[in-house]
Length: 218
Image (cartoon, rainbow, N blue to C red; front, top):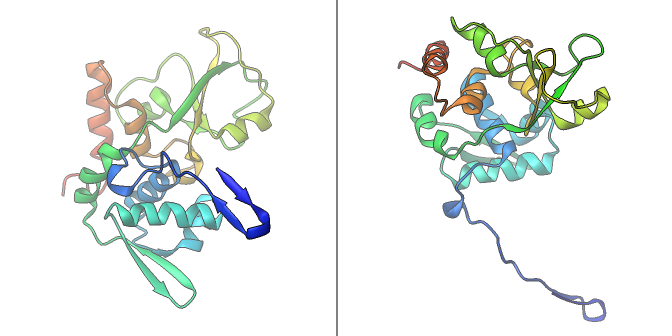
């Protein structure tokens, strides 16, 4: 890396840059946009609207939108100074193509003893949420999801795992934004966080949950 301010020259190596065709997973913001579209029916929105809905900066929304376009999942439509992201693919087909590129939204799990009620910005996740969407009984421990920033704001202290602790999942994107009712994480994100389970009851519950997605059986 060379920087010569007198001659206005800056030479930088660009090693490690991921080209669209080489990308094996979606970034968290791009994943959130696609999941929002698939579950809340937003077929065409300005990138500035995506930023507002998901709580991202315009730059982050622009990068995520371009990532989605480069992968062929949507089209970029310029309208003067504004840019619109348009999804034209059938939902079922889009899910089939994008699901392999999606990652587990859970970045970290910690155990806490809540000092009061449910923290602001937290929604049920894990088996607690799956019990809402299926006939599966809820686990013995309450599981909640929130962003790392919101968890930090609670000032809750992680502790050792025990039967009377609450599991807090810290997510790579805000689960509350995608929630259907403000109580539990959305169905597709929950599936991504639990897929690959070796428990037959959980697998059956996930299938039952996904049948609640309007376009799932189309």
